[in-house]
Amino acid sequence: MKEFFPYTLILAALLMVGQLAGQCHQYVHSNADNDGWLSCEKQPNPNPAYPNTHWIQYDFGHVYSLGNTYVWNYNDANFLNGGFKEVSIDYSLDGLTWDYLGEFQFAKATGSNFYGGFQGPNFEGVNARYVLLTALSTWGNGDCAGIAEVQFNLWGSPTSVEDLELTTGNLILYPNPVADQLTVRAELAEMTNIELLSLSGQRLAAWEMAPTTKATLDLSKFPTGFYLVRATSAEGVLTRKLVIE
Image 1 (spheres, helix red, strand yellow):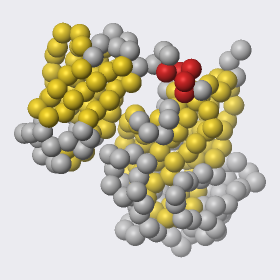
Image 2 (cartoon, helix red, strand yellow; image 1 turned 60 degrees about the vertical axis):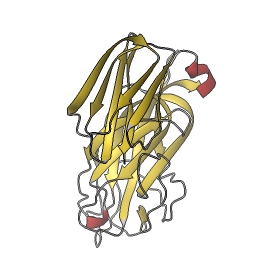
Image 3 (cartoon, helix red, strand yellow; image 1 turned 90 degrees about the vertical axis):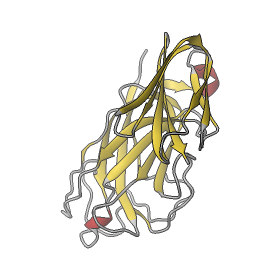
Image 4 (cartoon, one colour; image 1 turned 30 degrees about the vertical axis):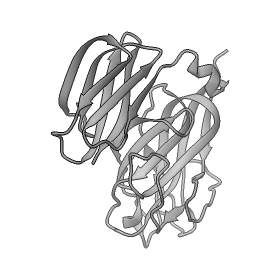
């Protein structure tokens, strides 16, 4: 039987410094300065594709299928500009290899003592144990970044990574960061198309090929920055974040 239940994490952040506080009513946050989490020191990101940043990593303990989310941004009435604004979201089975969900703008909190939050991104059933939120910008404060709470809807019985890997392929990029020649390797599937995308999803280059599990791409003409590599196979589409240096 398929199980469905909401999974609420009050900022289970790893390697971060901040104040954690719960809220009795799951749909309301106060505007107190201790009703949320605030980071004022950038730390090494769990995803090596990012530099040192303000980030939050959620660990559900097991692999689940992820659905809708609900978000309460940092709601300190005297520090609303510290809330997350542009946010990059990644998810992972093992905390080592990351898939990119997308870049999203989180609404600025209101400062109300009965702040209701907003509907967050939909993961549309992807399997993951870890979710990583990386703050790319805030609503005005350059030194600190904060958020109050994120609620996740999870489906299914807990699954181990080992069980899931029997049926799910993986896409490996190396080296990453890369300067010129990039090797793309797919596990459990043969690639027929590889695309290089901007973080906004714009296609910058594409390579068609006979079905293969390994390909080498020349990226020497592309400027330094963050990109996405998307590989298509008969089994589906896999996307990884890439850094060109």
